Length: 235
Picture 1 (cartoon, rainbow, N blue to C red):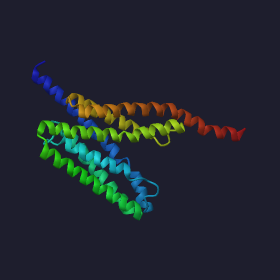
Picture 2: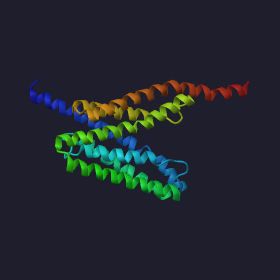
Picture 3: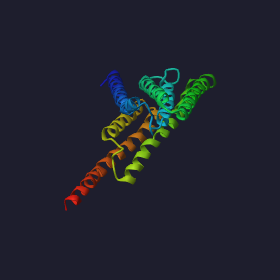
Picture 4: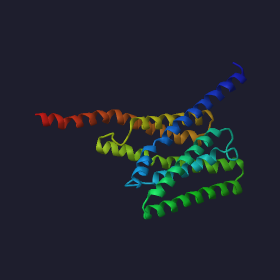
């Protein structure tokens, strides 16, 4: 096969992995819609926390900046997925602020302003203090740290499933989408030879596999536990 053919196949595979990651990420971005529909209907944030959306917004903004051509070349699909993600998270946060009580409202407004300030500082520092090769390293390390910090949520869910021996709070399709998205971007990062993409998403894919294994293991236990009282009541 000619060099042009190899390059074409390589480009098709890497772009396919990136597009798949974008589509699967969209599934994750829309997954909180039922929660916010409930908030709007009840006109209250109830016991829901807005912190996950604050963290997600900061993560999306930093990764969006990393994917921009001024920082990194040839990974525009990272910028597209995180731009969409940032819009979703921003809308969720605004809805949360509208329906939160006064204490939560002020806290969320403060955190939102802090996220904007941190992102502005990252952009300012990366442009004014780093030339292109080092600029990618600087923003890349920040994006990896941000992505890995986002894994606190899957770790919490894994711990909850093991502790309660129930998969009630770990929806199967959400776990599957998380795994497939992480794996897609892991493949995209490997094909682009970009460890700032492949490493954190590789960790995410491993955590996704753990979630799926736990789901299949404890879903049987959940069924048996749910049936047991019925058997006892008939005895």
